[in-house]
Length: 115
View 1 (cartoon, rainbow, N blue to C red):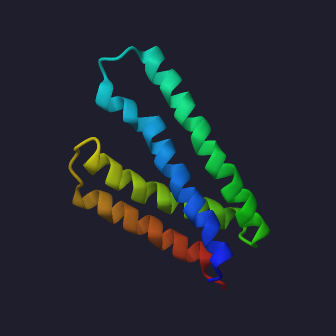
View 2: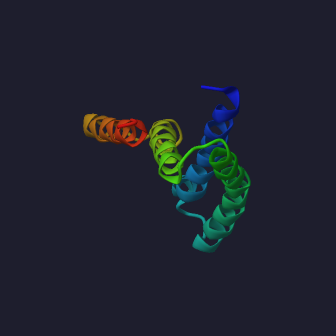
């Protein structure tokens, strides 16, 4: 894979780290007012979009189909979320989560397979 095709994947990974914090980071601070959680999430989501939009634009310019970009994003999202939930939220990672994630990776195979 040419290096330029890796750029969208790196940008989508960074984007997903921001978005995971925007969507779930406030759960660690449930005693803070909801309005503060919403405002903080909006700020974090803005940073997320600064990586996500270029990732998709560059990816499309490099020949990725939109279904491929979305599939890459979903696999990255699950990977980032799995790490985040264990590391930041201190939640248990269960075997059925791993099975579900593996099925998503299998779905990615079917999206990228040239039939």
